[in-house]
Image (cartoon, rainbow, N blue to C red):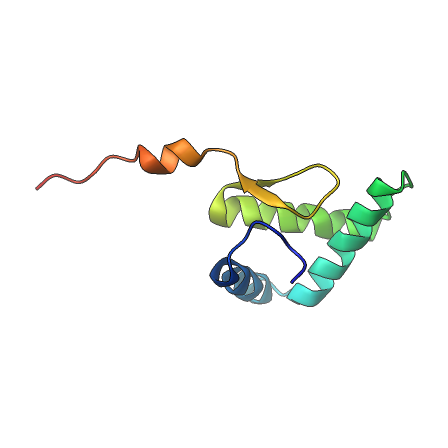
Length: 91
């Protein structure tokens, strides 16, 4: 997949979740890429491309808490410290 910032495992899980929700990962990525390229070129984004980009952003945020960098398909963890601060379970 042409997504940066996700591990191979995260990409496989994303593809499975998209499939479970009735989407083909390839088509989601294809339309999301088209939306990003249109934005980079300063052109109007096709409504279908925008829908798939939003779907991808929402799904990645839901699964991993990552946010996409503007005009790119690169996702970053916006709260890396929160994972380190999660409380440990005491017994």
